[in-house]
Length: 256
Picture (cartoon, rainbow, N blue to C red):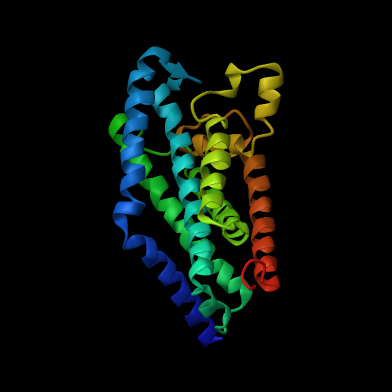
């Protein structure tokens, strides 16, 4: 048991060090990107929109930008790590180790979720420069949603890394599927601004529940019931983690 625990710790540490040792690739891009987001959408556009849901517009978009950065980085880290390991065949070292399949999944998911959380905190710190939010309205929901959604997308990233056939597939998954869903998930607008079919379609977008859940935790405003959203997202996270373990056990994408 001690050998397995050491192996899990070692693999997790290796994956964490992989992105920590590359700060210019890990932390600088989201820092610069979100300074631009807050400058353009928050300051310039915010002067015209004023308030949404009774809060300043720049505060309203802060949680959505946190979600965007956190889940994108969690997904990217897991998918790239798995695919790069397949591409260069060093993932076989983990497969031939005494690690259980669930431990391999935990190592890749935990390290990727940590990256997502760190990026989310970084974006929140950037936002604090532009907006006077100084405390969390509902700390439990803020922490719980951020933890669940980064874990969920890290688990999705494992699936992406296993099914991708080349690096272009990873780009397609992140840029043309993930990000559009987030942008249409209520990051820059409230569902109250929609009606009829557009609103009904928005409710089918899972990002709506993630963005509103974090928004409720940060500023206390939400278009959905946060407790129900948290329960559903938690169940989905468990299901995707189980899928990851099953794929590893089958050797899907890992063996020729």
